[in-house]
Image 1 (spheres, rainbow, N blue to C red):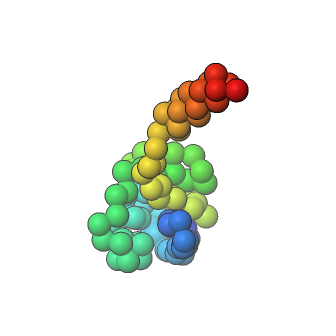
Image 2: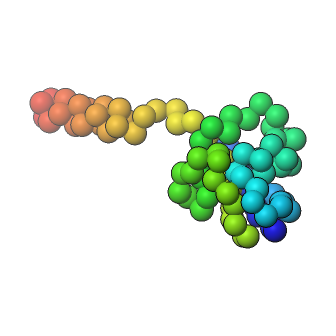
Amino acid sequence: MRIEVAYALPEEQYLFEQQVEEGCTVEQALKASKLLQEFPDLNIEKVGIFGRQVPLETVLREGDRIEVYRPLKVDPRDRRRQQVENERRQKKED
């Protein structure tokens, strides 16, 4: 069956089509993918199918697109807390 494997860097995106056997898992597909040939040290712990995070043991279906997610540089909650704190400081200064 046909699937896709996607990965995005800030300046470049990669999308590979791949044929896998029925019953293949996300992990099996990634290990056999062109993506890991291009990026052998890529961390594949956080992956999803069509934008929804899934475990590596997820069995694929025809047409699925596996997305490999990069680690976040900053936790969104921490970023928001910092923004709120900065806004408070600005109000006090005004």
